[in-house]
Image: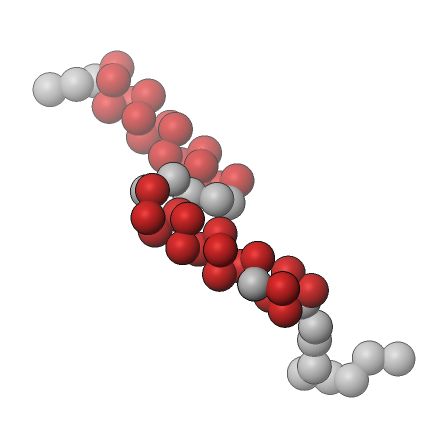
Length: 51
């Protein structure tokens, strides 16, 4: 039985979320799948249609 509005994340409790966020901000490399796909797609399109 779950309590509404209460959740627990072991990743957040151990600080994994903060490490990933700090890494992404420092390097400019996204750590999420969607972010990485967007960055790669943008890089490919820029290479193909470079002005």
